[in-house]
Amino acid sequence: RTGTPILEVRDLCHRYPHLESNALDKINLKVFKGERVAVLGANGAGKSTLFKHLNGILRPLSGEVLVKGVKITKKNVRMCREAVGIVFQDPDDQVLAPSVEEDIAFGPINMGLSREEVENRVKEALEMVGLTGFEERAPHHLSGGQKKLVAIAGILAMRPEVIVLDEPTAGLDPLSSARILELIMKMNRELGITMLLSTHDVDVVPYFAERVFVLHHGRLEADGTPEAIFNDPELLRKAHLRLP
Ligand code: ATP
Image (cartoon, rainbow, N blue to C red):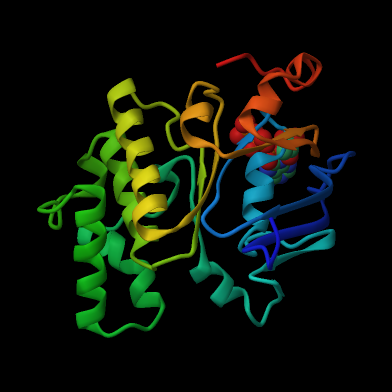
């Protein structure tokens, strides 16, 4: 691929206080508009840490992250967060508003949109995730799968160009997982949103991913097609991955 990547990571290092090794060690990668990328790696490999760098939630120890060719800085971090939305693993970790509608409206309100526009965005996002009619429901009373859909709708309502999902199907039953994956594919195909997701479920990968990044102890161990990744027995052994 050529042209300006929608996301680019250059020599990125991250270190958490009191840890002796870097959680991310010289990561270099590019993601292009419209791509669907899976990020694989064992627990602690650095997937969540990498994701938090993609829209400036964490700041690099060294190296840089570029969104649409522009380096993330203090000044433009707001814009980067609008362009790159992250759906975190556990929706309960985030503050849940009293109603689904308020939960989804949080992002658009923060963007300074008019009341009418916020209402449109909420309606549009609920429709996309298939939760029309859920406006007044209490998020904490919803099922795990429905909470995940609300979290995705909240990101969608900001009309991001990239959506990053941290283990979106973790803890969900097969039907809810399939529904989330279908939604991710639909947002990619119909809205052209670039998708990155991490998962421990390798069965998801051939269905979803055009490209795979494999992280291992904070390093980018591989970057290739699912075919190339799953045909490399040494890589699979090293990164503790099984075949789909
Ligand atoms: P998982 O699959 O379990 O979600 P991961 O690949 O997302 O793992 P990270 O959560 O990015 O991995 O963690 C990378 C490393 O950084 C691990 O060694 C982890 O213990 C450490 N780490 C993560 N968050 C923090 C933190 N807030 N403070 C200190 N260390 C952290």
